[in-house]
Amino acid sequence: MRRKLVVANWKMHGNLERNRLLLQEIVAGVQGLHNADFAVCVPHPYLFQAQQMLAATNVAWGAQNVHQAEQGAYTGAVSAWMVADFGCTYAIIGHSERRGQFRETNECAARSMKLAIKAGLVPIYCMGETLDEYEAGVTEAVVASQLDGVLNIVGIKLFSKVVFAYEPVWAIGTGRTASPGQAQAVHEFIRARIAKHDLEVAAGLRILYGGSVKPANAAQLLVMPDIDGGLIGSASLAADEFVAICRVANGAPGSKRRV
Ligand code: 13P
Image (cartoon, rainbow, N blue to C red; front, side, top):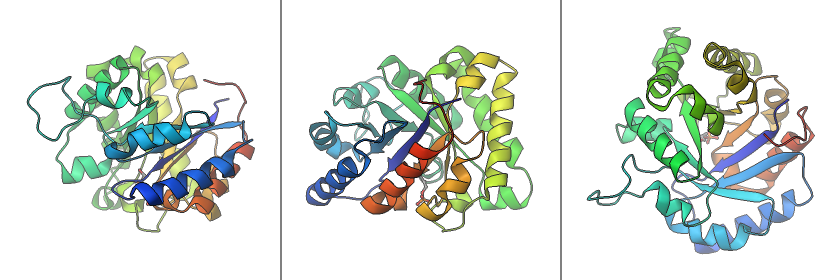
């Protein structure tokens, strides 16, 4: 079985002082939890702070995006190597807010993913359907195209270095979460689609669920066989809530083996 992973996505929240308190409380709260992996993905300006505060702890850190080019005249953009300079383990790629608000495509995500891997980062690749798509019953087709769109560029072998996240857009920040059964069905679909290319990669792949994960629903979600952890937005801004979710992951079925 795969080791659970819980990742905070702070989005565009925080400041030095608030981050300091939040990180202190998270570190204290997850100290001694060794059966799962934990990380916080902070806004780029706070990567140094995360590195300083988390270096000697069991909480990893990461960025929320990296640009799709290695370097060059891209005002305001941040490369995979820049975030790697600050000791990041993870980089979120293809979040629906990047796709929706910044017009990032599967192709952009695939290029960022390749560079992130080249820079030694673990990409967390996000997929998920909008409310309209959900209501039209095309969830699997949307997720399949987001998956195939990167697979065709990145190649199946590199998927062994990627974490996936299924985040239905209608569940993000809405308080409305996919039921454990709905989420499990999509996770199973993603794993099966990857298994058609490589059984071993599919078996080892961690697929996180994101979208209004809270302490109250985490246990039901994380017990599902293909849900390997959570990508947590608003609940990650309150240390007690995030730590409670980490505790659930730590106690959930799943091996202690690192993948
Ligand atoms: P919420 O947990 O606020 O719904 O956000 C989920 C998310 O987008 C994580 O990347």
